[in-house]
Each structure stands twice: as structure tokens, then as C-alpha cells.
Image (cartoon, rainbow, N blue to C red; front, side, top):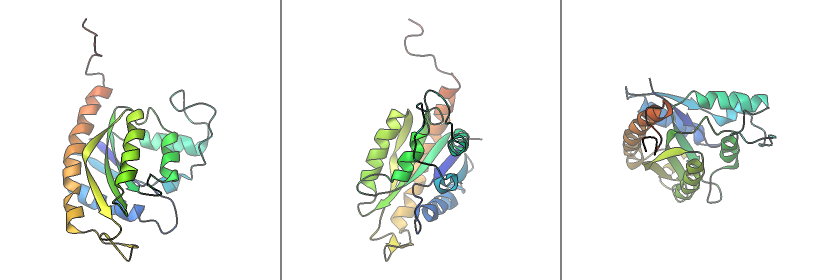
Amino acid sequence: MTKIAIVTGSVRPGRQSLNVANWVKSIADRRDDAEFEIVDIADFNLPVWAEATPPSWGPAQSAEGQAWSAKMAEFDGFVFVVSEYNHSITGALKNALDYLSPELNNKAAGFVSYGSAGGARAVEHLRGILSEMQVAHVRNAVVMSLFTDFENFSVFTPTEPATASVEPMLEQLVPWTKALEAVRAGAFAPVGANA
């Protein structure tokens, strides 16, 4: 069955990322067309990426990097939980992505974001990063405000519009994920192959 990771985007104490990921999973688990699993980047204790060669040339040398790479390679698609820090993604998420390349190629991603502007600026940055990594990202996204979806800016209390936006994102993500499984399996000839 198609496997989709719900990836946390923050590692700091007091973060909301894991709470949001658990909420997304509770909604996603109602579906029967994919399996969903939370992947918490905090569990991998990744050092700042300083490998001798890029991940596109070969696997990480560190044990932490190898464990992270192996975990992410298990999945066909991803939901990234994106908290906005200084108008972008967290350093922890960027660092985690820098360890990867083939683990993400020709896979699909969706986004659940939050911040003072709904995390929209962070998602736009992440879209650019994932495009370079050959990840197809869906248009529909879950965008939450610190002012309305977090009581006192600290207790996750998603509003009805936020909750209602999860399923449309998944409705795009799951078919894209399945379509890219065929691409990775070589079901499509390269452009010009029949010329």
C-alpha cells in the first residue's frame, strides 16, 4: 500500500510541530487508500550537515544520516508540517532535507503550515527546495494562523476551516503519490525515447 510520511518540521522544546502532525494523522487515518506514519525529525538527532559529498553522489557517512535516509526512503509521499521561522522554514527542517536526494526524487508532497501569516512564506520557500529535489508538490495546503488556531499562541486548537482543509490537500496528494510510483517504476519512457 502507498505509504505517506507526516514529517515534523521543528525540534525545539515547546514546539507544536508534533501536536500538529498527530492531528493531521488522526484525520488521514480515516482514509483507506494510503498508510500514514509520523516521522519526527527530532528522533534522529541530525548534526549540521557536513558530509564530504552531496547526497546525490552517495549515502551519508554518519550513522544519524544513514538512519534518517533509510527512514525517508520507506515512503512514497510526504506531508510536511511547516512552522514559519523568520519568513522561512526552520533550520532543523532545512538541515534534515540537506541529507536527502534519491530518497525524495519523483515523490509527492503536501503541506500543513502555521505561523503569524499562516506559514505561507515558509511553504513557498519549501516548494522551491523540493522542486530542486524533484518532488512534486500539490497546490492545496493547510494554512493555520497563530492568532486563530493556537490559544494564547501556545495551545493547538485548530479551527473548523483548518480542519476542513486537510482532506482537500490529501485528495490531491494521494493520487499524485500513486502516479509517481509508476514513474519510479519506469512505467513511462523518457521524452524522445521513441524518436
